[in-house]
Image (tube, rainbow, N blue to C red; front, side):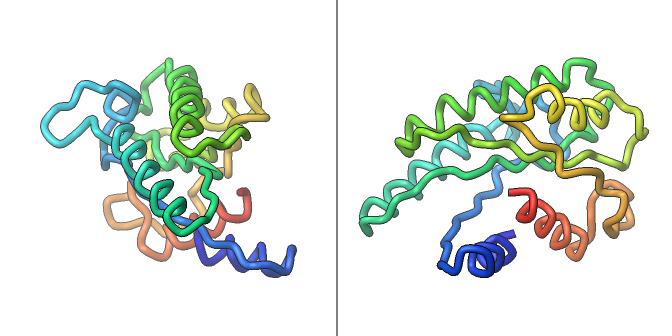
Length: 178
């Protein structure tokens, strides 16, 4: 994703662009463990706080070198665990609202942070989370964008996760959407 964003900025704006990317998700966990104030269970339930810690650290590093820093996008590759969750869209939008309250308070940025969501594809195509991932972009077009499905990317043998090449291609798609 980072290489694609830099290449697109250089080719379209003829300037350099430095970005930092942090992965704070929790493999196989539902929204209940990804949300703000999740009740930790063992090692799960800490991704939201991890995002705050990473943002504070990067903001501090940027300030130390007289650079500006802001969060440009929140990328969500999620949904299989919540395939049957009828409240997934509302929970995803609440996650966006919470990030948009807490991250700018750290970075000092004024602009809203866009969320980019990809549709899960390994469960039923008509699962509540699959449909919600498309619908949320329709319901909140200024805030959240669905980058599309992932069926076209190569999947690992478990049929749930992408291969390394699949995630590379998905990262390119996220960069194009961003």
